[in-house]
Length: 127
Image (tube, rainbow, N blue to C red; front, side):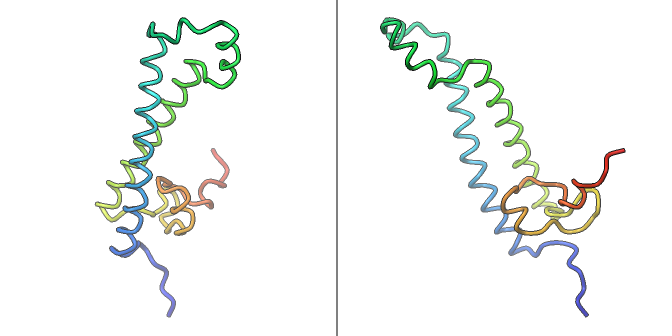
């Protein structure tokens, strides 16, 4: 009589929501930091007066503007994925694989809370 679950309970959905909201807050903070970094990349503050050797030394520790832009874009995509996951929680469709229609295991959702595919669906050959 072991009936397969077709959706997560409201309590489980609230647990996922808390995890997603926490990740979303961190992701937004990181994104804003990257944006601020990009905005300041063109400024003419006192950093420009530092000796050249100091800039060369620190150059290896800083990301290029292009790398930062790419990271910011990736972070924005992650934020959108988390926001979409919150919508699926509200619709009570969260955690259901969009290919197989089966529940995505809880462990996978805790690790990748914006997942819409089960490992089974991800490993299916692409047509």
